[in-house]
View: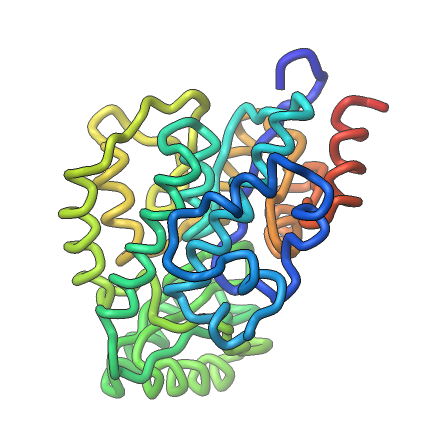
Length: 314
């Protein structure tokens, strides 16, 4: 971050962090946040859903995605207004679209409408198919991959999110996820926690959503990245041969390497992270992955003001 003696990354939260009431105080206080939510190009009352629910609708991926990305775009605008811009950006899953919006690849309206399309495509991909996701604590990658292979006679189940050391998310058909969870516990996992998301994200079951996104991206104008973004499916910056549309198409149907992304940020010299929420889940992952990175979760007006003051050295 120029003019300040820190190397700063913005990390954007993914699905599962949403909750009723998110953004209400920011909306009441800050015109720039209000403008993003009021101009969101969606066919439902986005701010009413964020502030008042109902919760089951907010947790439906078709609505979660545009709500989360609108919230993130609003917070990004407020940080920018305060003179806070990152050296790097990344996001967990859906949060990657917010990182790209922060980097200037999309404007806020384009990002919100893209993820509304993505949410519908993801819901359509598994319509009528009972699915689930669960976080497995206390197992390493190879052991959990072996468990998923063993459980696959009950359906599709894959390791989808490598979040931090000792936390990996599995995803797929509900019966297979349940079976893998039981097998994981028998094999020594500390805990298996079901997640409040509405689909088998980042699995091969999402291939139809990847196809739909590929087609959609042909009519989307991708701007140049003004700041470097680290991508989920690489756990790193993109290579010369990688294109953003291809990475996003791949991302919806393949594993998210957040732990690898956080390690890479550490290698790049990042010493400070602003987590753009809601929630503070990613700050927890950072602390468990790389020691010594300072984290500022920003969801409320109070947290925003505290983060801005700290980053300015006030």
